[in-house]
Length: 78
Image (cartoon, rainbow, N blue to C red; front, side, top):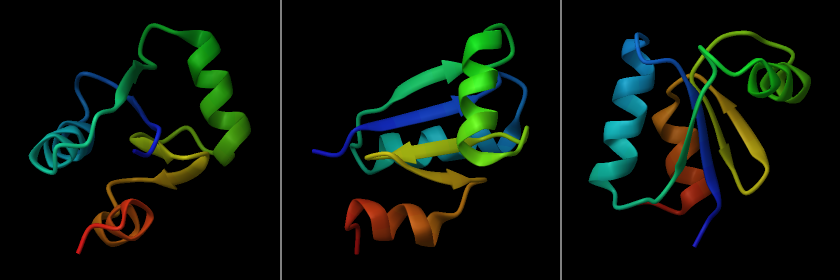
């Protein structure tokens, strides 16, 4: 099983969609709310160079935004 983290905020519609998509696919993930965690923001920016959410990290590979094709590819979802 892949190690999945989702850096998100509660008000971001793409974050909500991304988390719902992972739940539909029965993918367990750790949700990291960057709206109130400065350390998590720094982690995310250091990894991607960007402030935008969601950032979905799958086995160490970051996906910026809700990119279904890339998520499916990294998780081997067909």
